[in-house]
Image 1: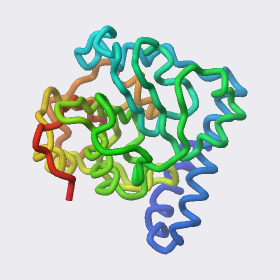
Image 2: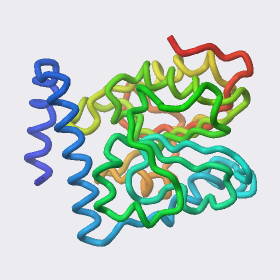
Image 3: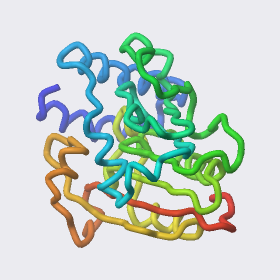
Image 4: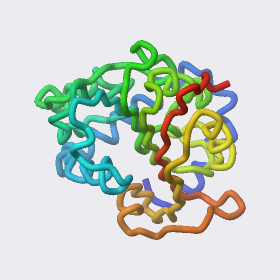
Length: 242
């Protein structure tokens, strides 16, 4: 879509969003997500070479840390985000469009995929040593429920890695507004904060390239749009998010 047209569509969509039935929103979002990946798949293929860096050095972890760990990647997409983690005991990608992603070749991957929503993660309490959500938390339908479920499936002292765009208006595939200050307030009671870094976001909204450009900010002043990269460890006595 042409940038000028997109700039007109965004405020219109934000205005009418409250009046669109939830089920229709969910179907539209799923279709647009799959269309994005299918277009990329046909144009230049789906690549996952950037993931090892973002799961390790970027957050100060070593690849050896993942040995015999159980890892869950929320909103994983079809690229094989955990293919590199071949020493992990369990590596699962959770995404509501997994059934569609079979057409994009995920059956060739060695990691496991589960079709499902983060608002109802289909695993028991305290199942995972690490949960990641890279460019996916603002794609959910209910942030508070999603956070509660993430906290529930993390073991005590387990790690949470977050990369997400914050402070933006609703869009068809990112329907929720996540304000950085509110997100931090929700997480702090349940986690020890290892790192919380703000980044500027490129005009093309390429999340990973924005992080590689290393345009770090002291803060996102006045709720300006940007990216948060956060590394947290669950408190031993953490309660469910309210």
